[in-house]
Length: 193
Image (cartoon, rainbow, N blue to C red; front, side, top):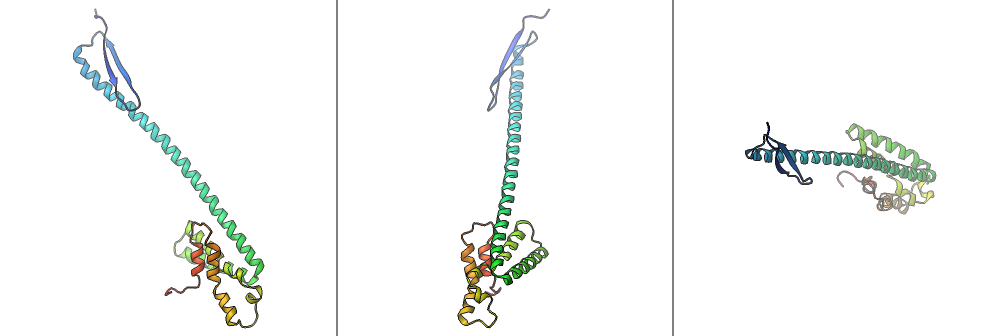
């Protein structure tokens, strides 16, 4: 007949879990204590590993949610910039019909060239937005000078030449993911400066 039940108790190690492994059997002998201790250590490590995996999985889910929220925010911000630029362009078009057609042509041409160069996504959008407002500085030029049918005076021509710098000053305070103000300022610069 089996003898009395013997018990071996070993602690379960782990960073976030503490417990005991208790084995009871009439066949247990004192020399089994080392084996039970090793079993308790392995069990504790496996439990800790499983908990760590669950935590990693939760963290990965949270990161994916944050990425989705970030992308949604970035998409909304991009649409807001597009709408803001469209509003500026509309105001310019109402003031100067020539500028209207010119802006549309430059935007299409810049977008086509950028696409051929392999630009896409945000870079292409930023370039198209800059092209759409490249002449925004002309808003500071009197209508009579913009639409003057005869030759401009030196002073009038000087005003026209300043429109890139004026456009830069208008767009500089705008916090944008693209260097719109800088592109506008440089849109009449030659490659050699």
